[in-house]
Image (cartoon, rainbow, N blue to C red; front, side):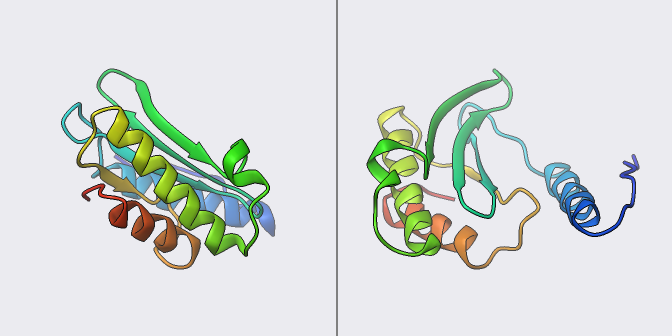
Amino acid sequence: MAYGVKIAKGDAYKRAALKRRHIRVRKHISGSPERPRLVVTRSNRHMVAQVIDDIAGHTLASASTLDASIRGAEGDKSALAKQVGALVAERAKAAGVEAVVFDRGGNQYAGRIAALADAAREAGLKF
């Protein structure tokens, strides 16, 4: 099934391209109660990671650079992404989640996205 996204100029074109890539990734990825989906949302300033059970439609755990424990931390954006990855893995383990399916949200797997994923793996979350 084809999804149409309107082509525009400048930043709107980038958002449309990101949306197309995210739709393409989501065709193959779905979260279940056994392996929920780890969704990463990236903006210019912040990172948000959520562990979602798509069948029940519930968020099991989440972490963000806007959390009080991370908000005042020092370091560049990649260092903050590592902290978000470790925190979401810790919260997911507390919720009883051992393994997840990684949803990069149409973003390239590099930089902050890869840093978050690596930190979550190091904290014991299986992909």
